[in-house]
Length: 67
Image 1 (cartoon, rainbow, N blue to C red):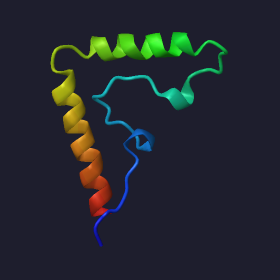
Image 2 (cartoon, rainbow, N blue to C red):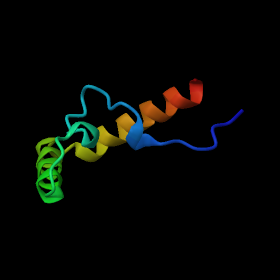
Image 3 (cartoon, rainbow, N blue to C red):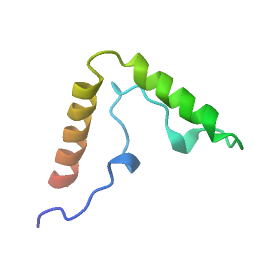
Image 4 (spheres, helix red, strand yellow):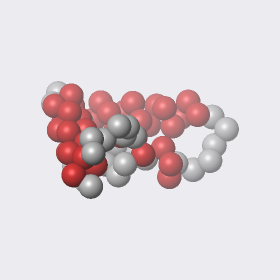
């Protein structure tokens, strides 16, 4: 049966994707600081960010399809 839906964001990230996890961030009334931390971490991935994230998404989808 083909996969009809998926939720990329809720699936564990591969170890090589060094982005913070929104679900483990400490509770804080200022979401802006969490957004800035995530944006900084995204920038730290470097010039190959898009390729890295595309690879991770493909791995996650493949894993879910094969489940």
